[in-house]
Image (cartoon, rainbow, N blue to C red):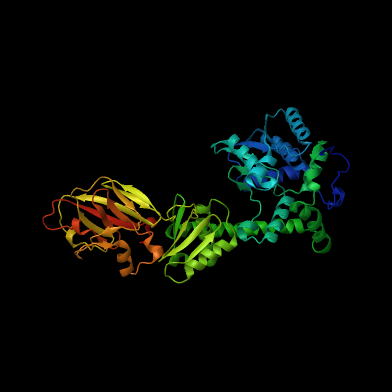
Amino acid sequence: MAQLVRASGSYPLGPGFKSLHRHHLSPMASLRERVLRTIEREDLVPRGGRVFVALSGGSDSTALTLLLHELASASTFSLEGVLHFNHQLRDSAGSDERFCRDLCETLSVPITVERADVGAKARRDGISLEEAGHRERYAFFARMTGDRDTYRVATGHTRDDQAETYLLRVLRGAGPSGLSAIRPRSGLVVRPLLDASRHELRAFLEGRGQAFCEDETNQDLHVPRNRVRHRLIPFIEEHFSPSIIDVLAREAAIARADADWLEGAADTVAPTIVATGDGWALVNTAAISGQPLAVARRIAKRALEHVAGRSIGFEPVDRLLGLAAGPAQDGGVADLPGCRVERRGPELHVVRPARRDAGMRPSTAFEYHLSVPGEVDVREAGLTVSVTCASAAANASVLAARGTTVAVAARDLSDPLIVRSWRPGDVIRPLGLGGRKKLQDLFVDRKVTRTERQTVPIVADSKMGIVWVVGHTVAEELRVGSETPSVLILTARKLGGFG
């Protein structure tokens, strides 16, 4: 059961906490000034901004509420109100909520309370209680701030939380981005207490005679963060470095600066390397392989996460880079979390996983309507196919049938045309060959691999059949001559401007 702690004398700190009186505590005025400096240095709240405080009832968020209540009256921002999220996980959740309501009434600050069955959400989504609570809580924050860019939600994360997060990320094998730990700002959520310690905040509450709630789950050593807090950090303090909290917080700040620079470098070159659309991404293999590894990894991670719609770890990123650096021939495939990567010539195609339902055609099967004139993106092939009209043949007859721009006679062609994938049994009269030929035989003759032929776009007409096999041939029936009155110019170009 949660315990209401009166901020006078000593506190039930639990295993791993030392007495407050054994630590040097900054004066309360210094704490206020430091919090204000953090807000200004990190540009957490714009001038004239409005801040909500996320109040759980614990010591950190209670201190944050008092600090921002005091600072707002003499600063360029205002305290909009308090947000309390009831996770409905503990018997004491109701008393925590009542404590928050009472505190806000004392301060004459409005409070908004939202409740959700976090346990049920975790079971339904197959995620941890911590992750389910995080999602629900931040969705609540988003609803309260809307799209108002002058609003912020302040949370009570401290320097101790920063150190604990850094250690957890080290144990999980994070890189610079992960080792940045808790950022001072994430979107509309800000953390003004990252330069303050948990002990300083409890001393601040003691000086105010302010009670707070002690969450009994913070003592549960089955939770990794609690083991780090109560076992690992005290061990390091005793045997290696008494100031390890400050050291780890400094390391997180260094990693954050490095990660920000690398992300900026990736931002600069990513548009020339990756093209994306709804559920797909194309990666230029030569371009990504030519980048410094730290930048290439970030670009690969973005491409995978865009398609998968989820966080991607180290191993899938390195598998994509391995495909990019490998032999140029088609056929390389990697099935990764939430997506599949296929090597097709100079590009990697990142797509959502193939469905395995019985009776379905391969996942690369596609069909689009192409208006005349108009264009359509064929993401499965990594191409945009377009058609324009010409009033006379002009120079159209010299365009090569096997190129990426061809001309066909416009006679009796329907609007719209169809752009689709190859189907078994497809037949065409290839330009200049004089007879009919199965597309499968044409592909075999031209050494088109099985993987590649599934993504060769076929431009067809509902009445006349196949018009153009992109990159290979046009239909003899639609040959353009000097007397052809009108033509259609068909073009295929790569998505994303890779050339």
